[in-house]
Image (cartoon, rainbow, N blue to C red; front, side):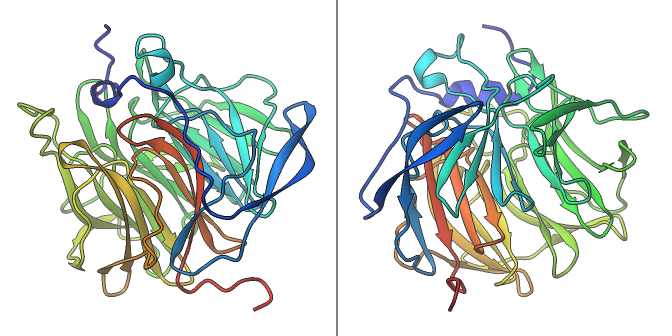
Length: 392
């Protein structure tokens, strides 16, 4: 077996068990209707679902349709407010095919919460190679999603792509000047004040990164920021969001150690620290949290929920590869963590799923991931406590 470049694939290989792919659970009272949905370039009948009333501070298994993306983990996702859909690209599934022959998916899907349907999108022109653990971020200025990095069997990647939903077209971007080293398991978020994307960390060929970069989509240029003062430890599998209240970028968790004597039995690299990056001053500062602080973990879902001015955290992988299924909320002003999901209706524990904020409905959408047995292709919604249905 190849050495597999950065830590990402080596760690993934250690945790994927052989079994049967896929996961489906229909115990939530959803009703079905027939409709026509265009999938790629063909029109095919599919089953759509009618959602029951949503309950604040709870999860619901959406169980959207017969035609859904294949089970996967490590995929990339971004919410496109222009089309009002979650866009999902790539990922992998080794449970079905085995590690050596496991494919890196190259397909592209859109999920519409309003109709509760998945649609596979036909991609035109050159398309990005399949990969895991890339970052994909929506650029509101151009209406396109930007994809950077990731990893396949040849190791970490440094290619940069933009996806235009208007023609379902990918374009390979070739920035001039300095560019980040190839990496995976990094995180990138959009800063609307600076109209730039901020990237931090990730797994390199032989090490972990603690560098901070900005990407300007309008100029198609990268800039290494070299922040002053203290920095987060080099890490992989962390989560970042933009906090609109403070106009800072918040970072949580990940794996922050490269060398571990016995990762299988003593995986001590998971962290639970919370950091803030201020693009205006170009500084990182560690934040002190209080309350029910989440356990150390990597590859969790983390979303900023603007109506409640809070972070919503779900899942991830913790000590001794425990697949976590907790929901935690953090008030960004007081930095106090509390338990969410008062009905205890959360999905099964998992890591490396996608989680986005659906801004039209004001809910969070989770898709896929890995649950210590197999890859998943279920779709869930978390309804924040301050949710108000349309017309209320």
